[in-house]
Each structure stands twice: as structure tokens, then as C-alpha cells.
Length: 193
Image 1 (cartoon, rainbow, N blue to C red):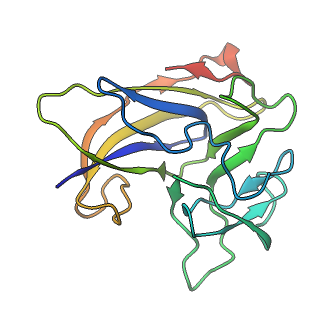
Image 2: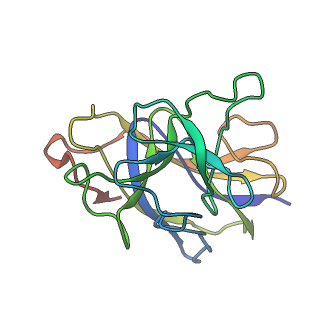
């Protein structure tokens, strides 16, 4: 049985909301607003572990991680700090967008933030043969960030416990965006893709 992986994104990218259509797939926490505690403006989670796996936070994107006020991000997972380096900085997570940094999020101020690091969600859905799946999402580059490619994938995992990251053992790539770049004049704005 292969499970659908809802979203995997890499590059320096901000994402808000994701929805699969034809047929609709049940994305958990599509607007990234569900967190175990509210994030402060500018605060970003140091990765995401899903329900039951708290992660540290950073007061800003380039601050070192802190582990005194942990947060859980339902539905979403990233790589996590390895046991030999538990304080490692994870360059993907949920950001409470600072004022003026990015606009166009879904339902609030939280967005997924990634800098060359995948963030994913594994869904309990069987991939159907001869079925077209279309992903719609909003993505963009924050004010002052460099413009880099937007990569979003549809992957299939052998079970619900396997993290569905590209090139992970047992994970099959079903589709991936190629050559998507946010227009230079859209800095600070999430646009639909």
C-alpha cells in the first residue's frame, strides 16, 4: 500500500495552504495555524514533528534554537535534530510572519518557512491508478530574501510512519514542480500556484 504525501517543499520558500484536488485529499493543518501554543510575531519553529513530537523555536529565522518553550505542529514533519546534535538548527518550520515580511497567508499569520529543507505531510490515502491529482498552494519569497526555486512534490510512502522525503528509502516520486520561481516583483507576497 502506498500512501499519498501531501506536500514536500524545498528551497528558500514561504508556503501558506495546500490543497489537493480531483479528488480532494484531506490535508491536516493546511494553513499552518494549528500549533500547540501561539507563536510570537517573527518566531519560527525549529522544524516540525507532528502531534506528540514537540520542537524548539527560534525568536527569528536566523537566531539559534531555544528549547524552553516547545511547540507541536500538527500534520507536518521535517527532519529533526539528530541525537548527536540535539541543538542543531532546522531550516524549515512554521513562521508567525513578522509585519511586512509576507502577505497572503490562509486564515492567519502563520506560514511554512523553508530554506533548502523539505517539510512534509503523510496522508492516510491510497494513491489511485489513472487518477490525476492537482496541487494548489500559495508560495513566495519574503521581503529581503533571495529568489530561489519552488519545489513541491507528490510522493507515495509505503506506510504512515515512513517520512515521505524525496529519495528516502521506499518513497516514490509521483510528481514534482520544475522551474517554478516567484516573480521578482512579488517579494513579500504569497501567490497561487
